[in-house]
Each structure stands twice: as C-alpha cells, then as structure tokens.
Image 1 (spheres, helix red, strand yellow):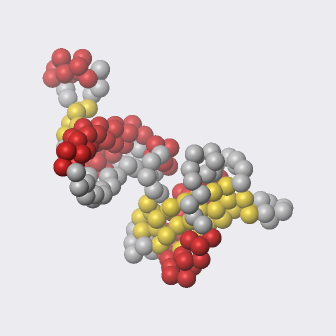
Image 2 (cartoon, rainbow, N blue to C red):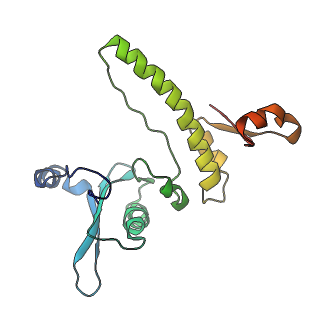
Image 3 (tube, rainbow, N blue to C red):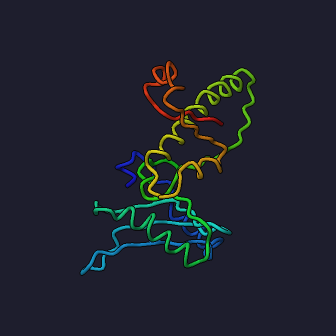
Length: 186
C-alpha cells in the first residue's frame, strides 16, 4: 500500500512495540486471511477512543476486490457497535468514503508561525482555501450521501446552511454559478 500511494513506511517495529507496551488495550487490529492457506493478506490498524473508533492505517499484500472497504469501514463499524462506541472516524481524505456512509466533517489544527510575514501569507491562503473546502464539503454531501435523511441535517451540524432558490430568483446568479441550484452559507 505504501508503494501504491507514494507513502513512507514510518510505522517501525519500535512503533508497534511502544504501542503494545503503552496502549495495548486501545488497539484493534482487523485482519484478513486468504481462504485455504490462512496467509495473512491485509490489516487495518484502529485505535479505540472514549466514544470513537479511529481508523488509522491499512495495508495489503495484493489487490482484492472491496477488501479495503470491508476491513476499514464495514468491520470497523461492526466493531464500534459491539464496543458501544458512538462513531467511527475513518481518517482524512477520500471522496470514496461518502458513498459508504462516511460523510465529510471538518477538522481543525493549531500552528504557530513565528515569521509575521509568512504567518500573514498563510492566513490569507487558508481563508481562500476555507471557502472552497466548505463549498466542496456541502456539494459532496448533497450529491453523494447514501442516507435517506436530508444531507442538510448533517451539514447544519457543521454550521453550513443550504438554501435552494426558486426559479424566479435564479437569473444572473445561476448563470454566474454555472447552473447550480444551491447556495452555501456559513
């Protein structure tokens, strides 16, 4: 998996030894074995939090149809239910997760940038990116959510309001936006 995703093998033997030594009761490893041979072919590393199962890493020795989703999503959901956890966090990235029930959520981080000029440049870039992230999150949730319940309910929990315009109100705004019916408000 590391080679396919241009990643770096940063989880060393020492990492796993420390994880077992300090957090053994918070680790859940979901594995897959090949039928017949019993050979271990894939695994998904999860960490158990207070009310959440955090999916962190996955690896596989060769391609198997849908195995990634089975280990990382479906089995993780079943495990979380079995443990009485409220949610599963499947990690960042991946529009492919939406159709499997993992709707986008916002994450936050805090960083100190010492140089004031660089800090200002980063703040300006983040403000521009923030608007696009909000818009993309709203559109993906509306278009790809597999749930029967309104995706707007999910978005409103994150401070996003979707308003659909009536035909008579669209006019020039619709032409400017390329025909999209939704306005995203934050």
